[in-house]
Length: 186
Ligand SMILES: CC(C)(COP(=O)(O)OP(=O)(O)OC[C@H]1O[C@@H](n2cnc3c(N)ncnc32)[C@H](O)[C@@H]1OP(=O)(O)O)[C@@H](O)C(=O)NCCC(=O)NCCS
Image (cartoon, rainbow, N blue to C red; front, top):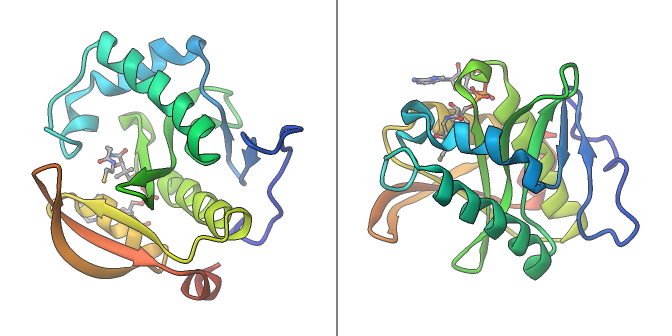
């Protein structure tokens, strides 16, 4: 896989990198992405296990997009817009975000692109970024207990189950990984 590759083409201030994996380009969101992003959030299947499980309208998507951009400015890590390199199309989003102060790896793809290993590829690049660039000691992932595909991604990454817990009133399973464990799975 692409885990050992250096992080590619970074912007001059190093705060909002563009990363290329074998098949994906991870880049900053821009306002031009709103249509594709809103389409993902409007799809009930994509949103089934996310937050309250309900699809979101365009105004919510616009707020979420702006919030992801602001997160990068505040924390120097965040979620990327994910393009498929062959088509140049925006097919998903994800990366790292702050979950009550703990870095969390997240991934979401348009339904047409499920089952191709893209979430695992994105998450692996995100963990590399978190451990290599930010030197995080631990990164978590959470999912609703019946989101089997998401939990399977965590397991493929080498993350270990920590606990069942809840955030913002939503019951989840929490997995985690540290740099040494990640190194063993690169
Ligand atoms: C969860 C999600 C990101 C997975 O994306 P993906 O690109 O299909 O993931 P990958 O292909 O890298 O890996 C998925 C793995 O789960 C497996 N899987 C898929 N559906 C499954 C299911 N119902 N039960 C068990 N395993 C399942 C796949 O076979 C694959 O494993 P494999 O590589 O061993 O065959 C995608 O389904 C998605 O975007 N869902 C909507 C958003 C979401 O729920 N995000 C996570 C929030 S916690």
